[in-house]
Length: 230
Image (tube, rainbow, N blue to C red; front, side, top):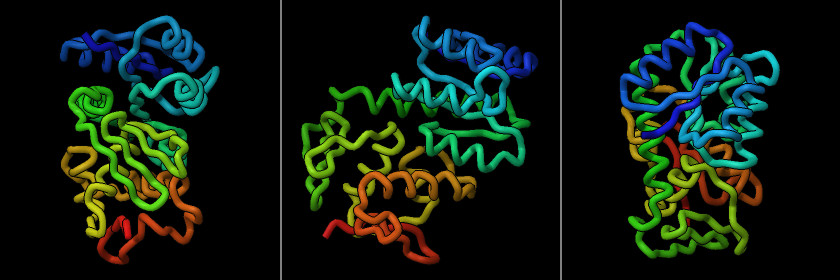
């Protein structure tokens, strides 16, 4: 049984999500501030975290940084309406997805299932083909689910890895934001461009010599993005 850590300073939200997660077959842990969340995470085996941004005694972004220093466990950020900067900051820090309050609990369940499914695929190396793809100074190791730049491993989250792997395996083809989202996130695209833009920016920072003048991931104005491998 997979374990979900639910973190929010609003007790009603924690209890609501606890009810829905248990009803969908998940084991749950609860925390009502950042310090409690870190303690539970360090003491228990957690498969995914639902994490509020604004909390007393260590906010969600600090919890995220502490968790990411030790683990790549999927993290779903909860954010109040209007906290766009916090959501984007969270993605840059390593969150895997976000959803705004108020939310439909069943959408949270669906997001959790999708994140856990992607995490399982990312970690199940036995299903990966033993295949290396070299592009300029980049090397994609599909067996190990790793990317190397100049023979040094590039630290990637599971979503970042899936996005760059998709690009590298589909070089010199233009993809819209919707096509990228549906192929990488494996969910219907609902028109939120920010999550794509944030992950593109993160990848450029990690693989490009000059992220403002990218050599690999280029923007095609009015269409989308292309990975140029030649």
